Length: 470
Ligand SMILES: C[S@@+](CC[C@H](N)C(=O)[O-])C[C@H]1O[C@@H](n2cnc3c(N)ncnc32)[C@H](O)[C@@H]1O
Image (cartoon, rainbow, N blue to C red):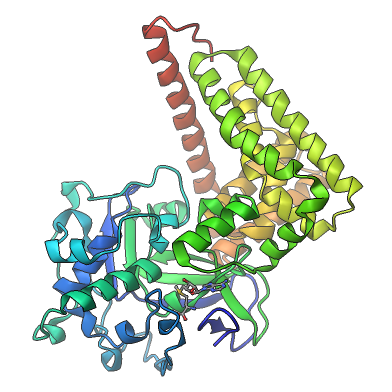
């Protein structure tokens, strides 16, 4: 039990960055094609179909009520024989269930009715926060039989409506999903990455921080949680529930966590940002709004129209806003760690600076890259974005300063730190392979971005809307 948080996970020994803190199989798992994230209701259906609600986990997992957060857990990790997953006491299948493909199952009426409204509340809907997360079923090509799971529970009667409602809430508050596994690692293993959503009960015991000390992702159906900072014995192990919104200012993060998860975030980052915002004279929150509501949409429109002058205007406004805030940071003598939290919460502004530089054909924006990379190290170490930004930053510094520069050596160390946090202490050869795959991924993503811009511009030109030069 942790003050104000219900139950949580506490380290029973010291961990260093890259160490695996937890690797645990799912109780239920639904997969889909890459870039699609199945709906959480399919997890409810999978649990009902396979009679997995017989698991003891359903009597102890958080269901949104304060009472359920206090239920005692008699969980003791099983001694694992040669890595086998043993299970019987908690009703978990002896082997991880075969994932149910989203395309094989249409939600049952009962479960759909019982499931909570499809809003953002599924932990999964925030996942690792990639753009374009799809909901709903996968393409049929992958369809396969829904097998495995709960043969031993097949005699269980279906739960009544009230119990089904609770089950849907347990899924809502405890499941996790993403629109892909780690793309580079999948490519290295020759696997097709897949969108997924599932319930990993031990993992669901982890509480949230906006600057967590671990990163998590799915490997072959299991949830892997890796330390991204030193974790001392007795310290709480935290994950981030937010995905991409993790990079928003504290007021937005707090609102999402309160609305979707019903708690007030008191993590070190939220407290630090909140405590200092008065000193910044509202300039920080106003600039963020300006980027979100005016400059971001103006950039997209200008890029689609190929209006270079308008892109330039946006670039200048973003640069001026960031300069002004830096001066304020300096004047108000924000401590470096607090300043770093603010910089992380200005991620969208740096992202826009990148996009403007790319649309104007200027290549990488070195200072924006550095700020983004530092932000990742501080609040989102080991994330997929961290791995990609570390490569971009390294390649930019190498191209600008050459292989013998001390700056290139520093960039190389930052790259190594990112890869250790995400993939563990892998050999140089494996790291090189992963770096190369991530490099290709970001080149592809940039090309797709540019193409999207060009397509929009062509559509506009077709409608007689203007000059397509970008
Ligand atoms: C997936 S559960 C995590 C485990 C939970 N503490 C329990 O006892 O089952 C998510 C819920 O834990 C609580 N929680 C998680 N992180 C928290 C935090 N940083 N501060 C307060 N409550 C938190 C909230 O009630 C949240 O909805």
